[in-house]
Image (cartoon, rainbow, N blue to C red; front, side, top):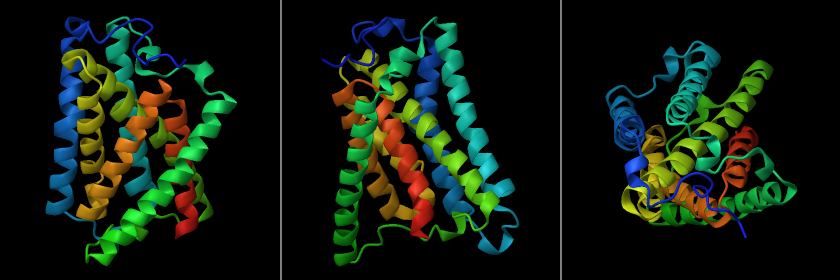
Length: 236
């Protein structure tokens, strides 16, 4: 039987154990960060003619932001004397079984999202804005992209699945508010991909939530997320 991500040192019943800092981070991840991304994207959409260096202007800022997200979560846990295991992140969970499940999940998710995308097109909706300007063109850019993909797989899964689901679970007594609201916030934080992209990525995020809850670990989620971003190289 898989361990629940919060089972080693905490439980859903311990809502009073959620520190003020962790409560603040929940608000930031669920509402502040997606709102800022959404507002900035629509007030100041990317101007392709002004991009001089993808690495300096796009990849490095994103990488630093992901490192910051991981750092503040790690700091909050350190201050509260909680290990990363309370988020469902354990080194031993990166087993062949969980890696294989992550790959299988990715294959199924790609098929499902492709069907949804084609359905949206059929009904006259744009499933995703053009993001070709993000994609690497040179060898050095591809190297940075792979690093960025790995980083995103770790930080975003720790944030929107591990942290949000377990911490809202403590506050509400149920994992489902975190699974649903976290998926919405995850989609909204990708507002640069348009409304259709927000919908698709929000659904994708909910699928990741289900995988996390089913396995009790972030390992297959991180594997699938990182691989999905990496294989995007071959789509452009």
